[in-house]
Length: 345
Image (tube, rainbow, N blue to C red; front, side, top):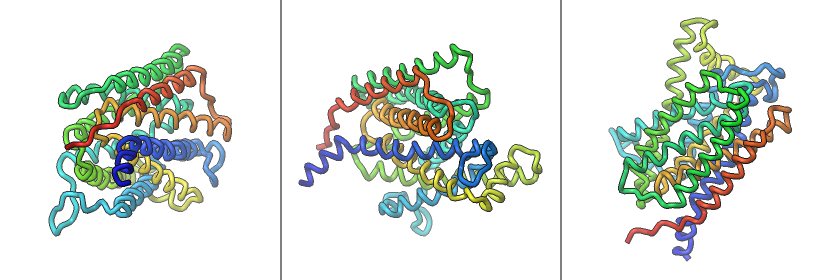
């Protein structure tokens, strides 16, 4: 019976993580959009928070959730030990965790630009990582890329191209700040995947758990420290400064009626980080794990866009985005054809 359970986990475990990622991503992205568009309970319609003002309480929710998950799973024992036997990150998990910190805030910011649907932004973010994945595998030549991974990457990238071409063909370009946000997101993602591919993604589950714990113990707390530093700078600069919005997130938002919605959004954000990282740490090549992760989030983005349209009358999904969703579903079917990895002798 144990062998049957292990075989099931080996074959379908990554897909269970993909479902968890999808289930957390839909409400996380919806709440982020609602917070900045003034749609949360207790807000005045159309008078949402500045994108930087939502970060503090969301990050507090992320820190609590990340540490609670590691504790509940009993995974602290896998971390490297430092002075007094306390868990500590290694240098590469520290850097990877800081990259994850930047990834968290750039993901949230990407969904807060007005006039741009979650589905469109998500296709940019996810499509860019699909381009990065084969590069990471080529840099680590020991990991062979299966044909299903190549095909799924091409199909997923085609979904991106169809949607983006339609958007720009109609003159609906992206705001300059959003483009910079996307570039920062993709840069830190490249280094995260590079560290995972070289230092984890092993057939040894304990090694993968060590990487997971050490990265997660840095990611959300690292972002919280950065927000405190920039918030204090904003306080010194005064209410007119952009960075003062971060300070407002620490001082004004906790006194509002919608505080706990932001904490919940942060908890869900960590949920996507947990399941997403577990997908990436699968021992198979990055060109296989990335399309699974990206497909889950793109479908989540489409559902979130539908939710916002039906509930609040926001922009509806366009025909090319539906075509992109169809290509993503085909990519998922292709990936499910992939045989399970062989267990080491």
